Image (cartoon, rainbow over all chains, first blue to last red; front, side, top):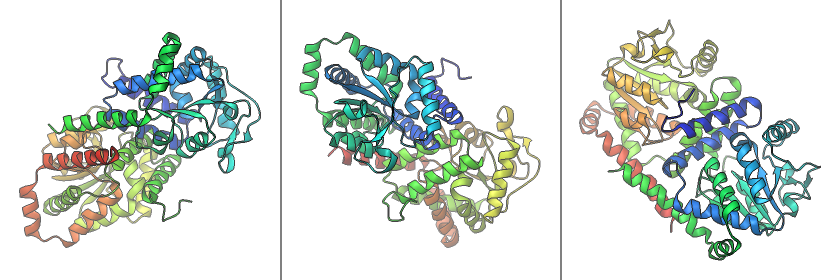
Length: 243
Length: 243
């Protein structure tokens, strides 16, 4: 057991949830490595939401509230780390939830669906079709879900898939701790923050934001500026360490 | 299959070897996460051995050649990633190889021993005793191995164990991609480089180095300078990305 007052309690708990996710079949081993990469970048962010991340989270809320058809795409890591946070965000934003796996198998789809439902998430179901401009099963999604959406939130997404969604003309919001990743560089809006900090911040903004504020945030949105700010925060951590 | 001319071939192959290691029981899930953290830092190093890392590797060779009783401590990740490189270094440096696991079970000890032997590594065997100033099984090591050594190479080591070895008065060399980790900050000599690049560089230096060069490298060794240089390299990557 990790004591709650451990300075890195949240990070260690998340690591444990990912390990449990591997054991239960929700998370693939590659997902555990990917989580580790995220941890390293989060360490460089000081394991807290920066001012620019908080702005990105408010802007994400604005995009979700302004969208006509909004979908939150959930993969194994997201389900293992943040099922309850996904439920709250879906409720506050009105977005639908679709499970979308890079390493897709029927048994993983079922395990993750069951886990999300057990946490009170309403999950879009149906027959996935190859509708994304990608090869093989990576193209699979629901016609009434991600395919039809104008705004999609894809936390912890693969670069190819993010690019494909952008190429389809969608507003793509991602949550990615690596500001240099292809996903981070390609998305319409990149939240460089840890998933379980980011999601509640978006949820809160969905509940509190008035439409004028949202319109202004969207009008002023500049993803390059957000990525730059994240890199700057990481640089400051390294500089502090060099003293 | 990852094509050999893929720009990130080595990194993707290493990731695959870790996933295979989890499946075969050599690597724990926590090891896969730890590998991911390393990948992130290696990305910031440009996935190559910096000038300061190369100097660190030559200095490691000098310490290993000058030691009276030298041991390479091998854990699950190291065995999965670099069994052949460990064999070559043991041969070139004259160091013994001892398996030392953070998550120790008999079956993991056996699996890793078999894997190392299959790769031509001579592995120290015997009954481990609680000889390190640590609680529980973390204290286990061989009396004629790590306990008796004056110089130990502990790649990818845990912070507590690294501190314990330093406290016992040993020269502790580590290979750690995170220059801010407790292991990196505590070791006598920290090589901030990726394992499968670092080991062959140390091996080459063991074969080529003359004693005068080695003495000079040891006399001039300044670990703080090496860590500072690694942080600087990472900062430069971030700065380049901000252009």
